[in-house]
Amino acid sequence: MPPVSLIVVGAGDRGAKHAKWALAHPDRARVVGVAEPREVQRTRFARDHALPPGRTTSDWRDLLALGKIADAVLICTPDRLHVEPAVAFASLGYHIMLEKPMALDEASCREIVEAVEQSGVMLAVGHVLRYTPYTRTLKQILDSGRLGNIVSVQHLEPVGFWHQAHSFVRGNWRRSDQATSMLMAKSCHDLDWLQYLLGEAPARVSSFGRLSHFSAANRPAGAADRCLDCSVAAACPYSASRFYGDMLERQEHRWPLSVVVDTFTPKALEEALRTGPYGRCVYACDNDVVDHQVVAMEYAGGATATFTMTAFTEAVGNRRTRIFGTHGELAGDGEGIRIYDFLTNTEETVAVSGDGTMNAAGGHGGGDAGLMNAFTEAVATGDPNRIKSGPRDSLLSHISVLTAERARRNGSVESVRDPM
Image (cartoon, rainbow, N blue to C red; front, side, top):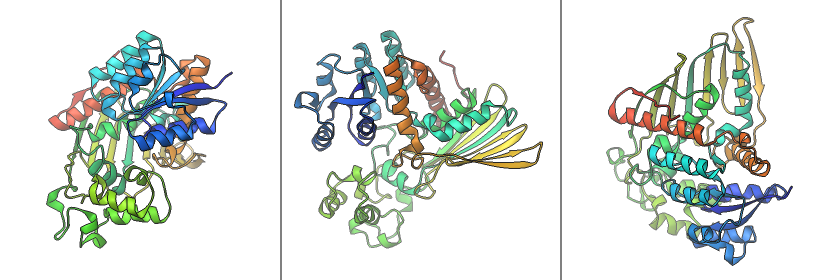
């Protein structure tokens, strides 16, 4: 069977990482074209994948104009720029892997779903947590009935103090009017994951959260607008000079440093911190997304769940989950699972062999590779059942996120409407 041919729309951090999977699995997939507006990233990507000039463009519409030159497209553009290319490539018969979130409002999500269904193409949304070895093991335990009936769930997403500062205070997702809500940008993964584990979306939700720390009100006395000029940087855990500088010194030429600079030199970093968004004081930015949020959920069968997202955790930490059933209790941290059996009063620990840490830099514990493996298998075999994050499931979880954010803004309890 020949490898699946792919084009990539958006060769930033996510697009480049997904495409790197193809380089590691040349018998499974190969990249034959790219659209990326930034010249440095486009040139680097084209070199890595040996793409000819005619298949390397700054605008995805130029690739579209070539007709159907590949089996599938990976759409990894910024969140607000998903709908138009997804609909356009579906109309040409491309199977689509679409980075999460699929879109930022229900109407746009529905437009994508309708486009792929009308065109008869497959869609895999980038809910990579569904594809990890850890999730597979955890779901097998729940589906076996070993815990009895699930009564309640506690789930924590520890964003990490530096991830919050990088992406959601200084970075592209800092403002809800320019990107989307924190819940959609970061935590649509988690509400989707809970839906997958429990086999249903919540019926009712409420939510609380706010921007508590990263604001001018908490700016230390003497702090400068730029970290390079700051006299109190030594006492600030969010000093960009120290964080990115230490990464450069350790030669960690990866995310998030790769977002700040194109070339990994002290001169390039100093220039970026002097003039770019990532050198700003975290207390002097224009951010407005929350830095902590709780979602309370009630399911049709009577189970309840709470989800907590908080910025104020260690820099790299796995999600942590506790699941309470009528026959047992389970605790998991992305790497291992502990099960306590009520009948026997015994405890079992299940180790899970993942692939990297459960974050973007670590490949989401094998989830990134798992998604690419499932998507290319689905395309190669014509079997959409290999995809765990298809259009209808993803539409439902996105509606849950939108409903929860509406509940937070309105201070209300909201019903989640099933889109089916």
